Amino acid sequence: MLPWVLAGAVVLTAIAYPLTDGAARDAVSWSIVLLGAGVSIVAATVGRGWRTGLGVLVTVAGVAVFAEALGLSTGFPYGEYSYSDALGPTVVGVPFLVPLAWLMMAWPSWVLAVRLTARVRAGRRPLLRVLVAAYVFAAWDVVLDPQMVQAGYWRWKHPTPGLPGIDTVPLTNLAGWLLAGLVLMPLLDALVARTAIPAAPPAPTAGDGPPLLVLGWMTLGGALAHAGWLGLPGSAAWGALLSVPVVVALGISTRRWAHGR
Image (cartoon, rainbow, N blue to C red):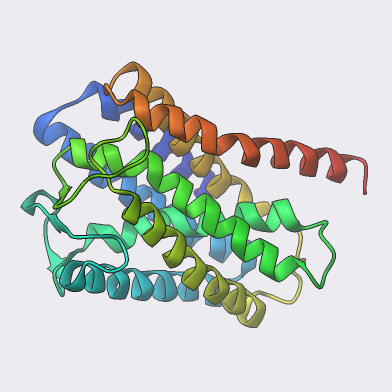
């Protein structure tokens, strides 16, 4: 029940985001990330056991802090960028909120990849699962990053060239997120394999619904907010476009599960 309550709170808080501004919007942003991270940790614990939940927290947060600290100091792999003071306290220069945002994004991306690849031949499944999870992880950021730049939470030294219609975030950022996903997702794969409770099947578990709800709302709902309220039509279009193959694959996967194939 708790993961669903947290996921519902994420949806309601995200709806409030485009309706606020200033300090109220900052508070909403913090709330979304804190609640979203909570969904990931609690759902992983409920679905696969406390060791997996704790491992997700430590693994994702550790990779996030390392990658962001590396990016801030060297510009690799995302490009040169800097955070504003609006994100609050930092760890080695990385705002505390950032690894929590990674938690909100990473676990749902992996969970969705598990569902989409569950019927793939066993020998090919791990690699395809990692690739799908990394794609979803990076696609989510295509929607999120322009919104955060607009809010003044960070800025890019060289924001172009970017995706057509997005002139505030460089293509290097997308490449960086793909690379980060390709590093992080195998670690989550190995973590679950080592820590998940024995009774948990490789197929999606009961605890996977809430993170999938968060993922769906924050990407497709976020694209809608960008188009209708935030004045970000470019990221709205890209978010919808990048979601198409995932939605199609999810529909095919769901149909196969329904028919037991």
